[in-house]
Length: 421
Image (tube, rainbow, N blue to C red; front, side, top):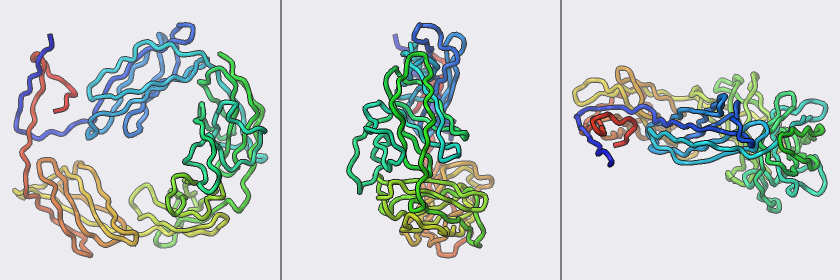
């Protein structure tokens, strides 16, 4: 018999904590022994990973969290262990759920390791894709502009459309150029590899056997010539170099089928990126900083082979806001959204509701023509305020209060955690 749920309502205002769910399970190796030390990764919205390691009995348990404003979340669970093939499963998680994946016996598998070199130096942080041997070109090479295994998001729309096949596994080299990829089912494979400054290169076909690590010959990558390179410096509004700025290159039409690359400016504000394939032509460069010190900038089109590009970040404006209720007392939790116009058109920025001591907040946004400020506070209707040009201080009085209902959910007299009402 199912116990009925009782909902006791009280007039109040409450704030939810992040949603949570519990994921547990047990892994066995292909012989049925506990997969002690296997690494299990759970991913939930918006792409947050939680990692657990199986204990001596092969068991794992982890509590995952996602933002309270997202009702349900996707859940991807992946497992890697030496001598086993990669395993994954997916499901939808609900707040408060306890997901027991039961006992999973991993399939047999092997691994591969090797080293990448770019000229005479180690090729660190290079992409390594493992593909089935049938997906390799007829002859190994190291001057390919297009890799079919990367998919449409990395090919040129100006070149013949390649055949696309998902790689079996992906990896990356360490700073010393070495790489190791686990979780391969037994079979015959090959590699595609490239660094940020090289062409794609392929290996010869190789065999992966069960519970065996295959060591590959060193794979040498070929550096891209100067006509693929774009280089320059990121500067602040006073002309000083900006370290740690994100610089992205894309086609001016934001064509998703062409090259897109992101790099970070160094301690001197300098950046360097390479266009591959070259057929993508001129690029639009965008620069921004991770905090709100400066506004971003867009420059383009910039032809491959151009050096000495200067990306000047803009100044930010400030608007000091104080929010009060109908009684004149400060509202200390609210979010905001700003609409403004700049050279590229209408731009919006904002922040979700959070604590604002004394109802005060300083809003920072790119220099432009302010149009409207919207305040969203629990217990009130969203309020819009038209802004005057040059405004730097504003008092917002929230007028329309909403009735708020909160209370307790019980089942059989016991409280029920994680229920959404």
